Length: 634
Picture 1 (cartoon, rainbow, N blue to C red):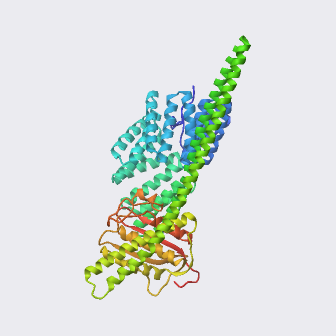
Picture 2: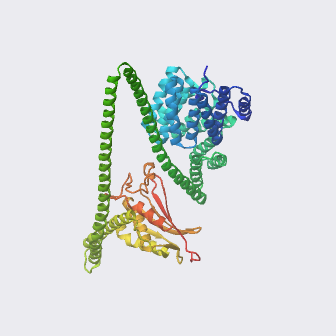
Picture 3: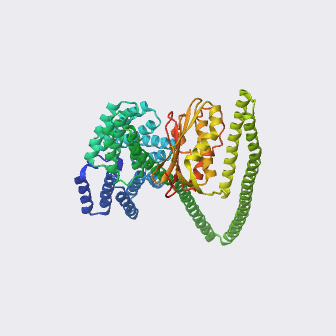
């Protein structure tokens, strides 16, 4: 009888404590035959995965897969591929996880075991869900459930139900998610899998927290934590402490929340998971902020941003790896097709030779015809390849010419607009300040100044975008008084704020200077973009403030508004070219989507940084950081 799949393991199979882990390793040492050794190794690796020892677990899974292939045992190959896929998933290495599960699916379809197919589709659903490919994930979850029901395998069915419940919970469909998780919990309690029961309790606690039921959420999570601590599963213990901190913070129990978050951070040090650490940094920042400890909150906020930036870089690499994975999969399919074609050709050749033995003359004629056909097909193929290559080269040349023409036209148009816009702005200023100008004339002149300033800003953004694309963006750094430059930028944009009945203030320290190393013209452009954006997305009657100060070896300037803020959909794209916020409440201003993109690029080229904090409905703060000049007066 073949061994049960990994997800079907009970607490007798995956028991708690170091004693049971030691017993599993002892079983591995005394196993005599190679199949028995591999089944014992499978249990050890699965325990390592549950305990959070992912490095050792991955090494064991790869070794087991190599030995299972050498043994020719299809079922053991599938089991170790499943473990590889899940451990890569735990390490957030999703391309590798996807590759392992896809290879597992090919072998599982050969084996034809419904329970194994159910487990495989469940693993693929989890991996696709982390990629953000929700429809693919839902498809595999549903396929997995259908196979589990056909096999009458309640253990795997409960595992896939758990994943499906999390899927609907992330979509905000809490009623459906709760129904599915309660069904999974009953199944898991029926066969005594304590780890799985604790997992279901955790998910029900998260649903209760989302609904604002603090007492019920704490009860579920504390019950889950007791089980995870008994089983000594470090990743689960760490994440449960973080979740308890979140619930306690939202319930106003801040001291307890801080203790739970600090415990989670201490435990996370042994997990080697940037995703887990990032979530804890975020919770610590929110907890310190709720306690009024803003310095600590800012420190953890920066650590959180740093880990998110690192994860974004990892995700970029993962996307490339995913493309490589797809390419390799297509290559494997092509190789299979070629092998099949080769086998077909061999069969044809065998039949042809048999026919030759019967009638040599006719065989010679057939051979000549066959060679002629092959030559004709080969020549046709070569001609088609040459035509395709020529067409590809022409298309590439046309695309490059179009790109160059676009850049030249953009530069010419933007450059030709600068002079008339500057002249129009100056003329409007003279009209507005001329003696005897009525209030209506002054209002219209101020409006013209505001519009021409915005158009000049757009022209400058277009020119900078084109210069950056061509690699010709020039900077001239010198010592710059950040206080003075901020006040000047505020003064220049006061007409825009006045026109929209907004309050624009600059909060600087008297008789103090913040001297930084920067290009003053480009830095002025940074302020124009940030303050202009704040005025654009702040409602009529709102306030925009600019604050200047120092922190460590950095000078900073913060532009704060009380507009609608940014939502989760904006965060991933806010500094990308062409970004347009979801909400615009201040008017009907257009946006090129270049302002924040160029602002960040300009600061990066000057050795600075641009940071952002925002919550939906609570405004936004953009923070400019530039290195202070050594020995500068502060």
